[in-house]
Amino acid sequence: MKLEITDAIDKGEKIVFKMEYDWEFAAAVAKLFGVKYADEEEIEDFVAMVLENITLEDLGELGDEID
Image 1 (tube, rainbow, N blue to C red):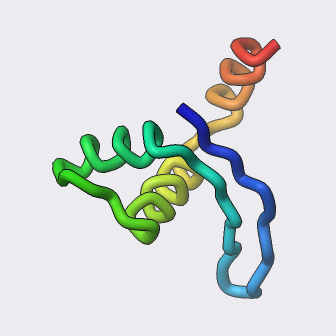
Image 2: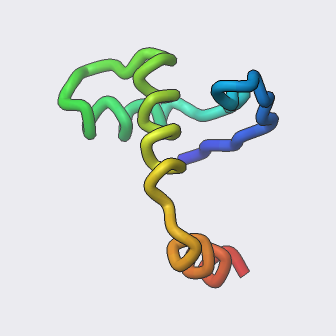
């Protein structure tokens, strides 16, 4: 499963992310939404929701797993 945020563009009121993801990631998001297929907007909404709710502690734990 792959999700890569390749760029973040500051648009003043909001930040726009450019993302690359594979079909496995899209399928996992669809399953979370309870639909057969997640479109690009649903995937973007999911990623934004996760990023808005992530804490510094979460980032530390994630960093430990990556190392």
